Length: 143
Image (tube, rainbow, N blue to C red; front, side, top):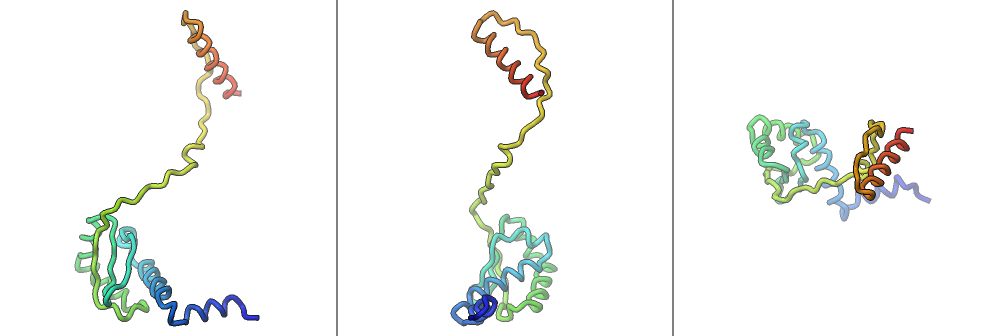
């Protein structure tokens, strides 16, 4: 019986799974970039020996095209396993990322600061009872 590690190594070395290996190398390359560059990358891919970066904002495109950053990218590229890359291209995505609403925000409970002491001088009986119910809720939350 083979170990899982042996099977995964065999799959990784198989030529039919070369795209997975390339994807992992791109991910490693992005991870070694400086934070100011890495934070602007939406995703990257390789096409015709060109590493294409899809960026989040036009400001990041200007940051990437700055000559010092291009030379840094080329230096980091030499250290990575992406040897066949000859140049870089930068594009800005025109789609907006949706911010996922967290359920945790809706579950936040605050300590009741009111004491429920107020004068209820309303003459309408329904509204009077509503205010008294509010007073009751406030006192229950305080306890």
